[in-house]
Length: 172
Length: 283
Ligand SMILES: Cc1cc2nc3c(=O)[nH]c(=O)nc-3n(C[C@H](O)[C@H](O)[C@H](O)COP(=O)(O)OP(=O)(O)OC[C@H]3O[C@@H](n4cnc5c(N)ncnc54)[C@H](O)[C@@H]3O)c2cc1C
Ligand code: FES
Ligand code: FES
Image (cartoon, rainbow over all chains, first blue to last red; front, side, top):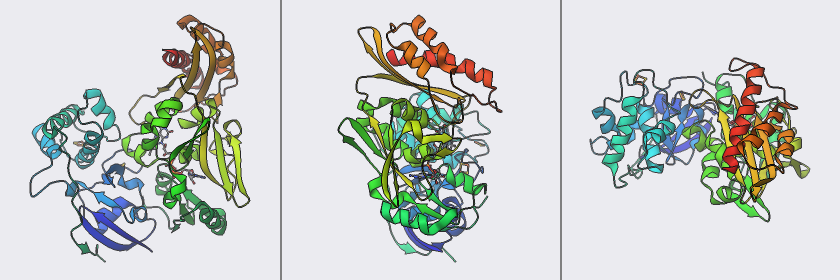
């Protein structure tokens, strides 16, 4: 067992984990944050995308022990006071999903993309989300949603990161 | 799938990591960005007894100027390589190739050292290291040695890094003012190179004065296209001259045939892409 102390969506957790535990399994099974999904076994689909110290990563390709001392934000941590994040709103308004399985990862990657490039053209959006696969939509509305979110977020209104609020055990 | 059980250590210096490697024995594995290794562990294609995470060693991360070279710590993430001003100014080809690797998420985690140590023949950065005559610094129990890229890549997934050794730094000679381009051919998003060409060219008064060309996925290791380089030097930087030189690209290659492409198709691609890469570089 190894110790991890990690801030997830603004809450500090301290847990013992097996070194082989993937971050995505820690989030889903220990912390109950099932908003982050697993869609593949090959690190290709991006459904598991979260932010690690402010950068998007595939949480199936990071070990939970590696995030000791770090800050993780999941799809469950981006709404503020009951109000959806502008990218969530835009996905809703633009019908950027059908089954919704890819959506949490798409949204997390889109937020990352807009952080680096607040006004991406269509090609830049497509390249920015190339690590996220959608089996349903054909991507058209996803691209529209990201560009619409960029409009909403001008000038540079990025999701601010919550400061840690409390210490809680993650379970068992 | 969940990886099989292993122990995990996170040394805070290179010396500690080398000790951990020795103590770990045959089954110890180094963990860098994890973007090749963790997928492999998940599929249980590797079952190491202990993982030695280099993520806690600050000296392995970062980019500095070192005389006529740019020295890059093995654990420097792709994302940081791409955005670095020294790299953009002096080794632009490396930034150009790194931008094509995988996707945004993988580029946040994957490292230059991990990519070179992994030595996948379809990996994009070996051809750049080879073309630009990079030197690789390898640390072991007996100290440090420096290996030229031309001797680093031994075979499919095999490098000059010996048992108990760690790649610590990659040094690129400055190619300030050279034109460069990485021309990668693949069919889908976040896919590996079917073939790719790394080209750095120095033009003087309309004539090609120096040329460096590296090939991705045209053999079991990255390959230096010396035939093309020699044919380019002294030629005018025109489309006809460049295409004629590009015909030499298959010399010394042994292109694989696999589900993506047959060898003769790769050879055809290599010629076309070499022309494109060099013309874009002299652009
Ligand atoms: C979806 C996806 C798409 C990808 N597409 C591409 C692509 O288009 N082009 C491309 O080039 N790559 C691609 N990759 C691979 C990616 O570039 C990896 O990051 C890279 O191959 C390994 O680097 P890493 O830092 O993640 O190393 P790790 O995965 O941690 O390690 C890889 C291997 O190298 C060894 N190692 C690592 N660092 C050292 C060191 N300093 N000293 C000694 N040994 C070491 C490890 O023990 C391991 O065997 C892709 C990966 C994914 C998941
Ligand atoms: S679950 Fe598919 S990339 Fe992580
Ligand atoms: S909406 Fe179904 S996978 Fe994207």
